[in-house]
Image (cartoon, rainbow, N blue to C red; front, side, top):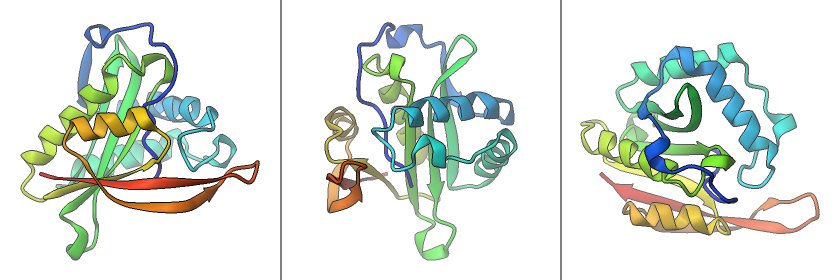
Length: 185
């Protein structure tokens, strides 16, 4: 699972300018893939480096269709006009003993961070999960130094469940920790 990316930069828009937050369709595959590539190119908030990412439009389309068909999974996008500016996926466990836990992955375009896009996406996902009879817990990983994302998650009722110190090594040799956060739904 990747990190949640909600930090950085000055935001030129407000959440009111985001036209919609809605469940993704297979037609969103190309736009979501482009968003992933932009965010991964920043090289800061995800464990995957841009050059390591091998997703294709067909791959992304299959993921959206699969998540849509599973009772414990979803994919939600935020749009400004026709542009996808954020996406959150929830993937419930495939094994019976883990099917009640939805793992979250969040991407928000750098130009839209700080405008409420992440909050709108996460609020929609929490609402969806609270009304999903298959899920009872949401979980995510976030770099310990991503303070903006951590504040957002806490504001939505997520708590720190654990810390993995030195879990990731940066190119300069520096080690980074991540936090495991959860919320009962």
